[in-house]
Image (cartoon, helix red, strand yellow):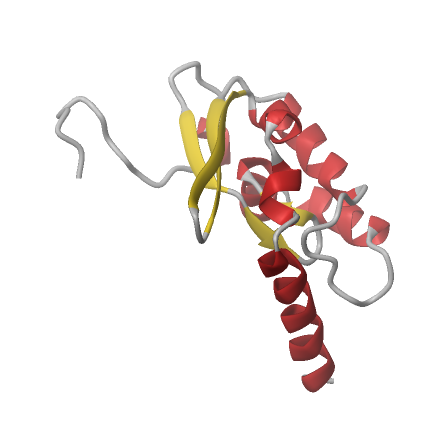
Length: 138
């Protein structure tokens, strides 16, 4: 996958989340609970079971809220604050890459051009589709 043989990709556990050489790469996506799926939210879902309960306590109602700025994302940011890791977040849409941010996962989302990502018609359409899907499954 990579031309550099010194780069390895492997699965790890919670005890390996601290290390100055860890770099996570992720594409920002819509998420019903957090508004956006980022490296922080993915790490929280994978390794932060107790903190996920706190995120569920902070959610607004029973409907998903993709593409919105929600307080639940703060739970994910706080979860990753204590780790010595880096991330590369990519925002893309049907037109291509909109923005890229590198740094600590708790702060990369703050510097991204999410408004560009979400101000197109696709964002509203995605939110409506998620809502309709949720309504149909009741």
